[in-house]
Each structure stands twice: as C-alpha cells, then as structure tokens.
Image 1 (spheres, rainbow, N blue to C red):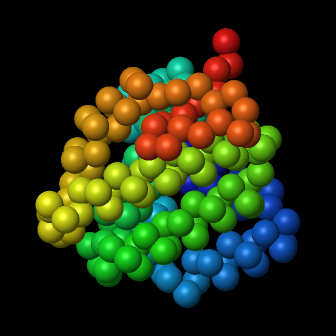
Image 2: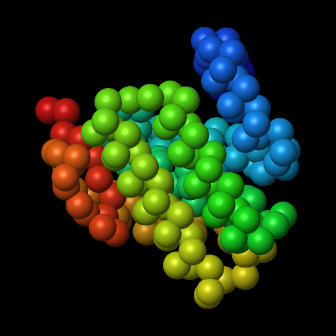
Length: 170
C-alpha cells in the first residue's frame, strides 16, 4: 500500500509535460510497463532489506538497487519478448527516469552508470541461460559481490567501466 501511495504522490507532483513524456514511453508498451513497474517495486524492497542504510541514498545500496532494477526489468520483459527489445525498453525507461526526476550531475552519472552495469550483466548471462528460466536470485549474489567492490565516484570525469559506483556521503 505504501508503494502505491509513493507512486501516486510522485505522479501527482509531476508537471503535465512530464506526465505526457512518461505516457508516451509506457502506453505503447503496456506489458513492458507493467513488468518494469513490478521490477521497480521488487528491486526497491530487496535493496532495502539488503542495504537498509544506503538503498535510498547515494551509497552502495543505491548502486546495487539500480543494477538489480535493470536486471529485473530485462528478466521480466525478456520472458514476454526478445532480449533485444527488453534491452531497448529498459534503457529507454531507466534513462527517462533520470530525465523526469533529475538529480545533481554526479548522481545522474552514477545512476546511469549502474543501470548500464545491470543491463550489461543480464546480457552477459543470457547466452548461458534460456531467458524463460531466469530468476531474480540469479542476480543478487553476483551484484552483491560487485557492490562490495564498488568504487567511489568523485568526478564527472571518473571512468569505472564494469564496476558499480556510489557517492561517498560520509
């Protein structure tokens, strides 16, 4: 119930232009949109359990949450369509999230980078596992390892290819 309240309040706070932009992304893909919504709720709840202090901030938990979120979107959408279409939708919807709910430039770089790590990780696993057999548990352990080795992003010029990143807020 709390999740729906947060979503309702978020949409209520959006400008008409942003609502139109969101609608133009989700309405042409209703099944993908429902899958990504479900992935959002799952990723947030699991990240909160695993990283209660940093999942909602810019720390390691946030890095895990963004990568895991993209893995889940890809997994759910790949079950009803091709992985290529799932990847295209995932990139579009997660990039749009950053555009509709802007952060500071370093936070945006961090989120987009961690989203890419999640998408890349899913695509890396794809050749070895049929897309119908993916489960969320396939991602958690490896993403936790990546989170344990995450790098601190300090500048827009930093480049940590293949590594999760977070902001040090200590």
